[in-house]
Image (cartoon, rainbow, N blue to C red; front, top):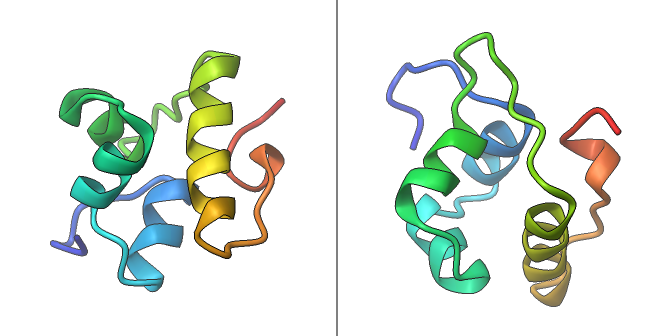
Length: 75
């Protein structure tokens, strides 16, 4: 979280709210590697599969975050 590495829109969002990638892994059931790719902003923004987007958005909404897929990814 915030180690000076470039972050994606999702990565920036969770960093600003104190959400750890580990939390996102647990909430979504996604692998550490997959969450890492979604949060990395290495100039190659990842557009995940629709079911992955749903898992992330649903997990965040369930915890009170008013977000939509377009907030993080190009649809």
